[in-house]
Amino acid sequence: MSTPILSSTFLLTLLLAVGLFFFIRASVKDRTQKVQLIAQEPESSLLERLQNYFDQRAYRVAAVDPATGQVTFQGFVRPSWFLAIFLTALAACGILCLSLVLSVLYPDLSQVFLGLVFLAPVAGIFYWKGAGRDEQVFLKVEPLPNPQTDMQSLVTVIAHRDELAQLQQALKLQPSSEAGD
Image (cartoon, rainbow, N blue to C red; front, side, top):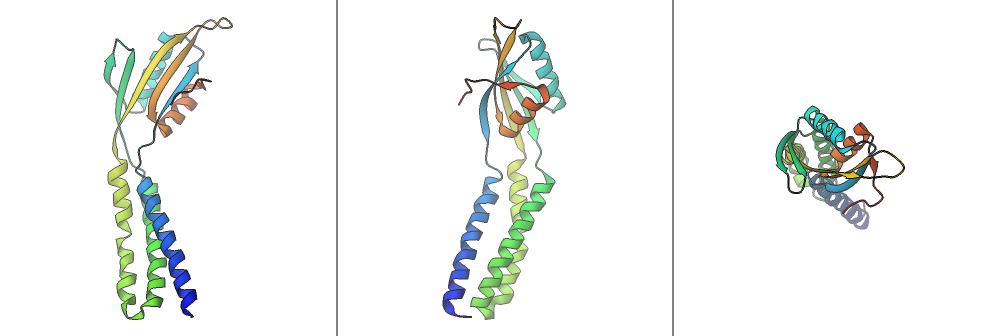
């Protein structure tokens, strides 16, 4: 193979390896968001439903601030076995590709480069240690009088975006038009 082909293949493979590195690193990134949701029920019954929902999701009440009406739930979020295995497989594939290109460029060191594939489980371990953590959900429920219906409630929640999606789906809450930051 000619030198320009090898060097361009090496450059592209290296760029893909850098992208893979940042993808693995982003797997443990905090994705906390704030959202405002509207429920078509009064505050008291909604608070009971929210308490039951978070109890079922293995969260517990960590703090209640009566001055602001904010409730803080806390729970441990377990990492995903599937994602740990998937990231390990992606890392193995990426390291193998880079090793093959390096082996063509430096044939004397091909055994060393192919041995780098054994570092792939580090990606899964990195994810496993970073993704398993205590999460907090901040919740505030306020009455929202509406002349067309009996009563609505405005729920302001700060939590991980996956938890927000589950909450919205499970309790059939609609996003507010004045969604928060």
